[in-house]
Image: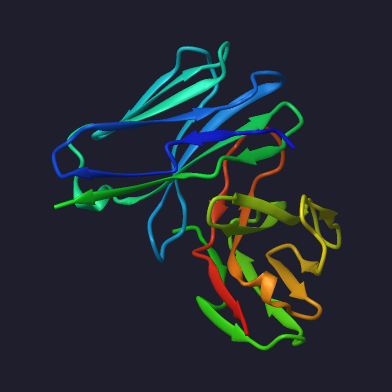
Length: 111
Length: 113
């Protein structure tokens, strides 16, 4: 079992604040890094898939970066809104086609 | 709109009952998975299946079994439910091969009393 770590475990931010959180992973046998957003009572929704060192992806106010050499990815949310409140999961897929999920970061945006 | 459907959103069962959690996907995906999610522990893989009638143990298979008689349906079975199986159960599917991501169901919150 590979250890994929996310930090912080939870955070509360005010509406309008920007925030970021981290996913750390072992870089051996890396294939792809996935970010998901999981809102209460809904299915986890795929946000980004990144495969190359230095990749940056953006979707609206949310963006992500990837550093495969040092084994981390950052997720950024600019100008947080209450609808951004969710658990954000990262997952590592390796060359053996196995997936390893982090424990998630629970974000609450306070209006 | 492709989807993974879990038959129940909430379930309450008694200790010792046999429990079936059903999952159906309409994307013709080969791979299907059952996870449970507990606070502070993240998603933990229970069982997965690469094809019809095939099943593989995940990281925490004890107390569970699965059935995949048809490609679109993957069932998780709790042979004799216990209180430590109270959890959120997520079903997921994906295409075979590569690092493509999952499509998830919306989860079943199971409480064993």
